[in-house]
Image (tube, rainbow, N blue to C red; front, side, top):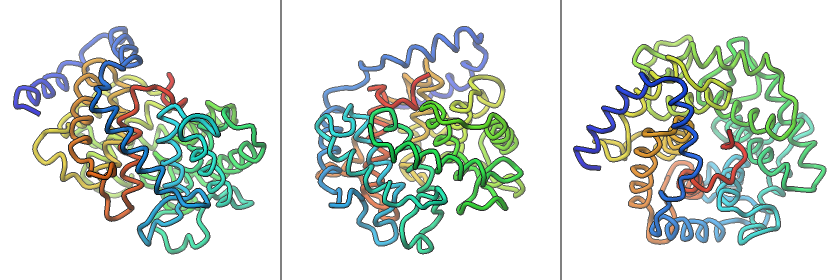
Length: 350
């Protein structure tokens, strides 16, 4: 990104919040048809990434080669979402069989309690992350799959999320109601919104309590802290995630959104240090979504910048590199972000 583009970003972050609410709605609508942002290079990159990702699926439908996150239902769910974002559905399209096998694996991880978790879950960090992403995936395929077990598993998974919300309004690493952090909370909120879109009942008080938790987590600089009762600085990845959670919970405008977008725009792709951000792929996965919800200039600036940076980071074999969680995870996050203009995933419908 050039210096002039960076200045444009700063101008946007300062000026857009002053627009009238009606103009904001029109701007958000403009991001619905963004096919002009999908350049031939982007489509080629996506095709290469999907081919690579498809080749990494195991016989049981799982993904993952790193020791710690091998056979993680959350990673499988994200990979399934990447295929759905390309237009494939269960048993239909170039990656229809891969979607179906991902469903098989996620269902195989479901416990009678509703918990979607791998067999040796005590070894993994934050299994509720996996539960949230897996539940989101099931909610997205629910209307596409004729399998009865998808609905029943999704219903139990949602019930577990609702029943383990803590008194602050959030969730933590395991399905217990003692603690909460904003990152795990966002993951559960996205799953609940997708489930509600699919026709699964979600109590209004659950969403209201979560909105309250998110709003209380915002710092004075517009970013969001990790945990409500701990003094903590704002960070870009979780701040982008919090914005998406607010949007998907029905908070579309107001000071909290304006301040959050202003904070997020400081970390736009192409600015100094953008590629060295901790949890890079997680951050872009959510930031592209936040920009899409914001629409207008936010979207028209952020998506091309993120697109170009992700294309530049793509490896020669079509993958993206994440040594901690795994390249399959990084590829799935990148492909979902890059394919947002396709508008195929129900969770992104307004």
